[in-house]
Length: 261
Ligand code: ARG
Image (cartoon, rainbow, N blue to C red; front, side, top):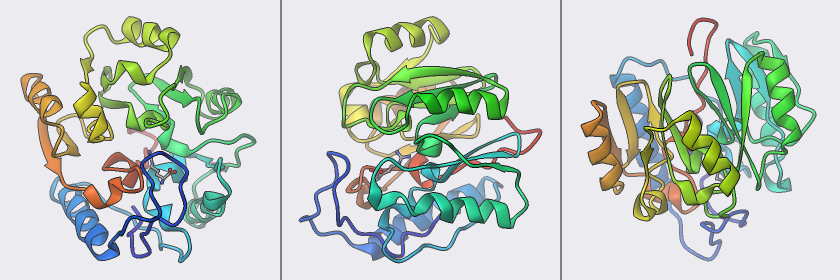
């Protein structure tokens, strides 16, 4: 995770970002601290990367890389404002001895790469170049399923779909092309489907450890669905970070080791 010490909205690269609107880094930090303490309370370890002044979106650690089986694929950002984040995150991993593959193509890390038990779901359409999907399949040696995003409010895969368990997901069908909706229906016929209201409060930008699911507290319909499936949903208030188009998952890069999923 990366503390939002320098959080502000100074540019706009998604429809949520309105540079004229006031933001408060103190509130962002308090909301982020609560998320971090929830992880610690569940017994997860939380590593931190130092925030860099002038990179206000660095709080969205999910975009910093993709880590599967202890191997790192570096991120390479679409928009110039975020480009320096790629090397900053790569250096963090290299300094700690992770084998890292420097990406050839634009990809925004776990914003567009979501790892299930057996495959990697990969978003494209707004940020990650679909050629990166082949690179990810090569680097990680896993099947990569390309999913095309079509609604610019849900510009990263992790704003439109969340992995709940090895083979369970929840998603918002209208965020995907008709072809990708058909792929999702075939792979996950029992998936939880989000309503417009769930998606608009970023309820799908959720983090699950297979039991606890941390998600925007406003996503009430998803919360009910999760309880009904035996999960333990935990609502979090990340309203300040939503001003930049992010929520719980965006703030979290999962470091999957050799034995983890
Ligand atoms: N302002 C950031 C951007 O538009 C938000 C990134 C959110 N991260 C995510 N994993 N969806 O790039």
